Each structure stands twice: as structure tokens, then as C-alpha cells.
Length: 101
Image (cartoon, rainbow, N blue to C red; front, side):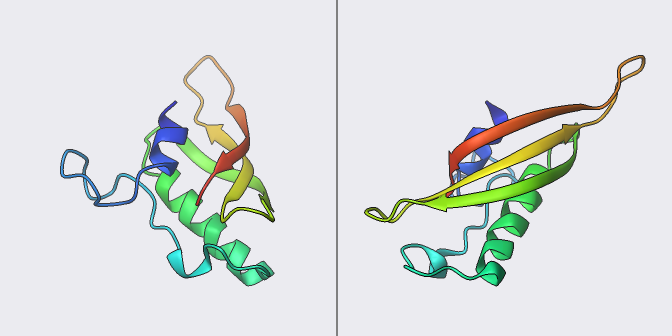
């Protein structure tokens, strides 16, 4: 729940949250018909930066993106790696088609 809420909240949009909470969206990319690999890297970096604020998340990996050709929406799929709390091993949580725009 925290991951999806974070990615739906623009950074510094609500004074109730800290300035580190939320995502800095690359608004100039929203709605573009042809998004380059460099642009997707910008989305990956924004997602990773937003999620690494959580003290249990140690990595965000395996990004893939899809865009609805009829709407101005971008969706991301990725894996979140959580730290290990002894005696457990690190855990991964997969997210699929999370709206990022």
C-alpha cells in the first residue's frame, strides 16, 4: 500500500507529508507519443528515488513500462527488495502496472 500511495503523491504537494515523501514526476514526458530509453530511465530514477525513502526498501529493480496509446498514462512494473530482518532473508515484492502519470 505504501509503495502505490507514494507513487500517486507528488513530492511536496501536501504539507502533511515530509518533503522527501512522494515522487518527482518528469511532467515534460507525460503524453508524449514516443518515449525514448533515456526518458524511461528518468521515470525509473524518479520511482527509485521516491521508494528508497522507506527504511525497509533497499533496492528497486527490473523496470518495465507500458503506455496506453489512447490515454496520457504510463504504467510501470518493477520489483522492490526489502531488507532482511534476522532470521529472515531479504524479500522481494513485485508490482505490475502501477500508474506513474
